[in-house]
Amino acid sequence: MKDKLSAIKNAIKRAENSEFYKVRFAGLDAAGIQTMQEFESLPFTGKEDLRMAYPLGLQAVPDEKIVRIHSSSGTTGTPVIIPYTQKDVNDWAIMFKRCYETAGVTSLDRIQITPGYGLWTAGIGFQAGCELLGAMAVPMGPGNTDRQIQMMIDMKSTVLCATSSYALLLAEEIEKRGVRGKIHLKKGVIGSERWGEKMRDRIARELGVELYDIYGLTEIYGPGISINCQKQDAMHIWDDYMYFEIIDTKTGKLLPQGEIGELVITTLEKEGAPLIRYRTHDLTRIIPGKCECGRDHPRIASIIGRSDDMVKVRGAMIYPARADEVLSAVNGVSSEYQIMIDHVNGVDVLTLFFETEQDEKTALEKIVRQEFKKKIGITPNAKAVGIGELPRSEKKSARLFDNRY
Ligand code: ZN
Image (cartoon, rainbow, N blue to C red; front, top):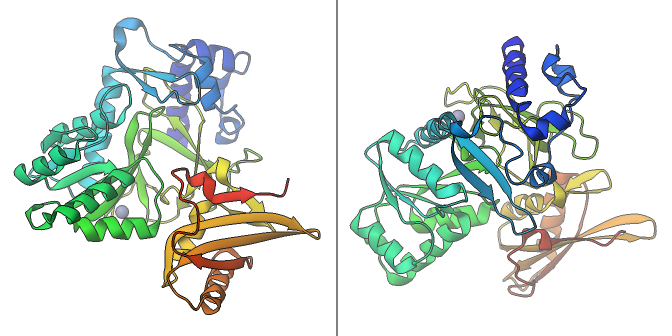
């Protein structure tokens, strides 16, 4: 751990050149920490802090070293601006290239990139990694589905980079037009949203591709800091560029390895805007042990939700992805569900509504109840309804209603 500690201390020293960390670490002697325990007692950095540093309060190097900025979406207020040096841009491309390689993409592939270009980090990250790999980029950006499919056919694209919802839309359009036989896709590199097993299976089946989850966030480079390998069940993380912690969302304390909690990231190499103990609000866990693929990079589970969506019911942690997990194991139910939590006669009651085409609902409810108990540890009230009876919503948080308080 000694090497890690000195890498972290160097990162803190660099961070302290920014206006933001000068104030945050004032009087703490943060760079003087001697143990990992001391590091774990340093204050977290949150998204709100980054907003308050708008526009360039995070910048930790002189102006002449900054080559680019990116910004996270400002839908909920002031945006966050992240300045990058040439080294930051290069490092990001190196990590992204590594992601493609982990997914088995080679310089012979043709990569159709549908995420947006611009202030947002997505498109340009996919592009830089592709060029460094030596593959051919087809830089489409989002939308214009007609042209998207035409280019996919004409350029014989072999890799599709997209959000899960856009990948699904393209799969449906390809099916509708009956051009599946003209599509050469082999792999999908899918980023930025949490998605259920059923949606994943549908995209894989309809496009006829292997799917890879790519993870990242604008505050920490962008997409490309983690991806799953051909073993599929977890994502490798690039721990030579970042230090990862999993904390208890409520107490902020480090969790034992393997437990689910919030991912916290410290950048080890970043110059433009180093971040120390940045709370991602993404829920995951460290997967212990070495991957069968032989890579030494540690692994985290696919992101299972946002810490803001997590609630505790009778000692069990509940978040929307857990319902996905239960329902995907049961035949005859759709991927639509809703969770209601109520307090009745002094007891918390969880009701899981799910959709099915079947007329015989009682037997199915029993299976879901048992599966839920087996996977999550508490027995829910399972209620089957017909297809289309639950409200459709773009927001995943609208699937969970906590009526207790
Ligand atoms: Zn692996």
